[in-house]
Length: 389
Ligand SMILES: [Zn+2]
Image (tube, rainbow, N blue to C red; front, top):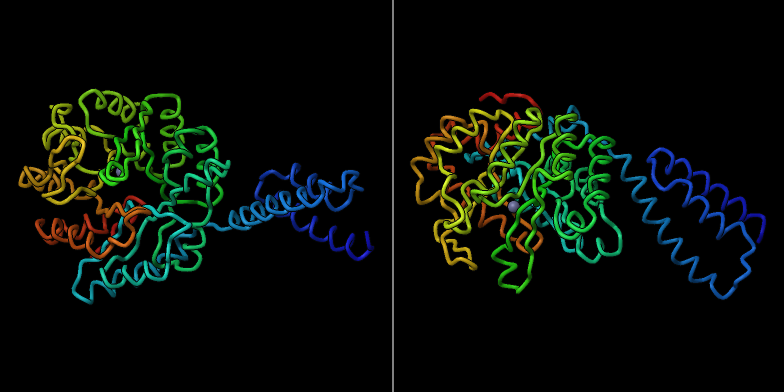
């Protein structure tokens, strides 16, 4: 091997080792692999190109991870950019919205057109959680730091949010997923963890595509305890997808009681897919639950009044059938309810249309309450500040 290449190799190795040490990932293994390729006399010349290729791609992945993990969310720095957008949307005559719960597919996402759609719709910020594509998760890439790039490039548009706890990254390798989630929250100061699916029937779009997702991880299982305990320790809120069924309410209440400082956002207010499975959930029940558990928040991502759940044929956005009672509850507890679009990789282009539906709901509330639900509640929950005016 020529001398210049060895020097270059040592330099690269030093840089890598520094990054790996700082990021605390795969340090030793990758440095060893790097040595193997660049510094050993490889006896098996035939295998060398293959080895070189695979190790180099592994190194590239880890360099990206290492660099990416140097990103840290700094609220003091991001704050003014967020507020500028909020103010300019207000000036345009719209209520600004912070979308607390949407997700995206990093392989198909077009950030430019997304932020343009945000501008048109008056969405101030999105807590955009990454959904790791199935094929990457199945190759062992459980966590994806791509969303850091959004926060770096468009800091006034995005509030960094952890990856979504979805199939298969979370369902097939839950402990590794929680390892990565915890590492990212601690290292990067992420202010919100993504939506963890504990009980999730197939979504209407998955039914249409013939996909068979049916997630069932008991919320009071060791995985649930680990997540709640981590949220309790760090104070960082997390979102859950948890279908509304009589039998699931007890375990959730037990967890909320056991971890009173774990801030939980229960997504999809009053979205009941099968009425036969739910006789307890009602505005009265949620009112009592909110009184008892100050750590519980609810997001308002639900369908419009015509939206049917295809597997039961029922109108599953129950809010509309009992709107006055739900609005009364929201008016009594405005800081506990959060605006959400629930966009996803397969419906990311719906931002404009779904914002109109969200505004249709917000407009049924008194103006000050609508403003709280639209963005002030999220601000308070995530940043512990009350926005005036
Ligand atoms: Zn959900």
